[in-house]
Image (cartoon, rainbow, N blue to C red; front, side, top):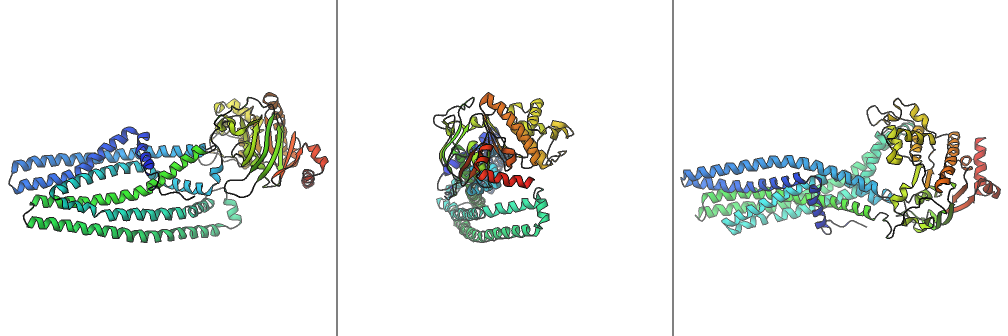
Length: 602
């Protein structure tokens, strides 16, 4: 569904968000900046008015009055200049604080969503990309709002002074309305261009990262992809540039027409007051005041023009941000009557008539699956690529909820257990593990934050993961910085990174659910087999204490044969289920695949 125009819906909400943003980030500077901006704005028309009075006093040969007004003029001018300097300093510091607050909240919102759906929705990614590009402008929007407050204060003061000379001069600000309207239309054009090019620009950035980062560098060189990637990058950028060139041309024509209308009004005001002076109906000081104020109206209309452009840009960005907050609030909400996660499993985990399809797709990955995983068992999940093994893991981890059906934990629907509480009772290691470029102790220790600083517990987790050899080879052991992003950081091999990730998964000693989704893909078959032997033994020890379940996903059939239960996923469901001996005796898909793989290793 297309996003609604922020000026049609949510305008007040977005403006209120901007108005309160700075006071959340830095209340004292926000208040000071607002006050300084107001004084500075009022000083400008006050200077014009006082200047005209000084000239009038001079023309009337009132030296004493001219001197008094000159002092007042100097005071007003100094107050305005001082407030202008203070305002700029406060605004700069306030925008820094506001940008930091926005960055922190975007991180919290995006990484805090309990599920993974938002990472796999193109419209969400497009919105996040635009927000990422514009988030600093959002941080500066508070300063812009305060500037606009000053602009309106100036307009009110200037309009009052013009009306005091002759009400007909109130038409001058009215001639600025077409330029404001044209500005609004121009900004809409630019916003449409940004939205149209958001996805191509994401692709262009992806191509840029492919061409400039280390991970894909080997394949790029082996397959000679430099020119192909560069060509695609240039084509996408050229298309985006063409779209913006068309937009710029249309916006320029519209804006020029709006300013032409104001120019007519400006010239008319000067001619009118000059004619009034010639007729003797106004004095010279009033002519000077109108000329000064007319030039200020010119600046103020320019300020409003800029403000309208800012308003459209910023409100759109704010609404994207509010949408992000709304998505986070609605993502996998806790049940109305939540149930605490059990301290131990007594029955196990059941999938009851579970069907699942990824959001935005039309194909069921799993269809009407019924599966019982007894408490205290080690379960191996096997099957072809794309069969749904990782999808099953995602449902057990509650990264997604089933499209229909239920996942039961000791008879309780998993959706009734607060998702963050469930996560504290499980642990996991994945094939697409994160390379956390921290101190090695922290890279492993974040698997259980309360124990991250305890080197002994971190070492024990590495030992359970058969990964102690990684840190033994590091110059500073667990205190070594890993990863090349930072000075002095040590780059690790794929297998070493994977072992640290396995250690991370072992930090929680007694989880109710341990998920190992092909976590040893970067290791050789013998190493994987030895590791799973240790895992199976550790899992049985955990099972005796908590009834915990270990789920192993692997392509290597020789490894999974030690599992208590082997589940074969195929055709969107459970094709076979049993022990290794039972499945081999059945002579079905598992036996066929096992024999096929065994022959490959002979």
